[in-house]
Amino acid sequence: MNFLPYANLLEQIFVVLSGLVYLLPLQKREPIELRLLSGLIMGGTLMVGPAMVLPQNGSTNFLLVVLDLVVMSFVVYYCATIKKSAAFYVAIWSLVTSQFFMNLWHVLYQLSPFRNNGSLAALLWGVLGFYAVGLAIVGLTTAKCMPEKGKYHIGPRQMTSAVLFLAVFEMLDQMMRIVHFGRYNLMYYVVLLVVQLYCVSLLFIQSELFKKSALEKELFTMNMLMKQQEEQYEITRDNIDMINQKCHDLKHQVRALRGLADDESKERYLKELEQSVEIYGAIVKTGNDVLDTILTEKSLSCQAKGIKINCIADGSKLEFVDPVDLYGILGNAVDNAMEAVEKISDARMRLIDIAIFTRDRFLVINITNPMTGQVKLKNGLPVSTKPHNGYHGYGLRSIRHSLGRYDGTMSVNVSDHTFELKMLLPLP
Image (cartoon, rainbow, N blue to C red):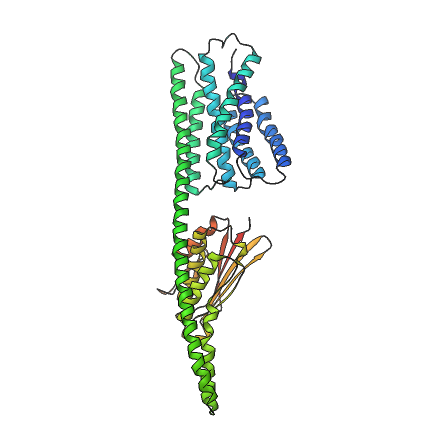
């Protein structure tokens, strides 16, 4: 029996089943039962339906590939709590898995002595059994080990290389479709199948390499956090020593005040007393340890440079931001503001205002400071008209890049000698 007339139909069915296998280990959206049922119905209708009515040719194959990627991406995104890019990555794996098993079955079927004697029922049961075993192996290995805690973290480089591998894979698949089996062509088909296996293997190795890179980044984060905690401890210890010294000085100042009759001398000592307790304002508590470390460090730096920093921050909503990204975003933003404010001679204008709060479904980070000179904007970033004005394009580009990992945005507003940096991050 000729296998080819059923290839497209079976392949579309197995793309849906492959997508289900890759979906199972992921974190689900609720209610998952309803979402999964509606997703399978939609996927089956939009993907299997066209394969039943369209003719088998190159144009149809290309259309089905595009349709598979679009529909499977939507179904995975609809059912799992992952980003759209990750859903598209899962769709790529679903497609290449299904097509590879289909091509492998095709070779085994042609090598089988029963290929011309079997019935349609035997053919269907054979391919169903083959796919069941294959998808079970995939579900216990590839689909299970690739996600990290039920999610895919797909960056631009990984996505680009995955699309390139998919393009090569589909080109090989198209070449295999036009090969007519014969005693010599079968070896050609097998060679193409081996190259496809090579592409799938490289795609998997690529995924593991990026996961290794992410683990190295996490290790770097932990080491940096430990260092920051150590520095925070040193800062806290120094603060305690300063407080003890201030308390010691206060005893003598209070004793001296009792013996003073001169109002001018009393006023001078009272001002010294006020300055003695200003250190308490340098300790920041927001509900997020990472944010506390950053803001306390910057607050102490500002105090040492004669800069007043006003901070109203709710750090409880920042848990979804990676500590490295949070250090980069706030560290660069506050450093830029400090460098700009340092150049202001009027002590009353040496101010930095930081506000972190939630509005609707967004986390808002707003940093405002006065500035000197002129700053022009190009592509949303400041372009300095004077060298060393304190606003470094590289730092702001780094902030924008970090925000992009969370689908966040950044805007800069310059008006009335005031520089405002506003960042928006959608809450998960």
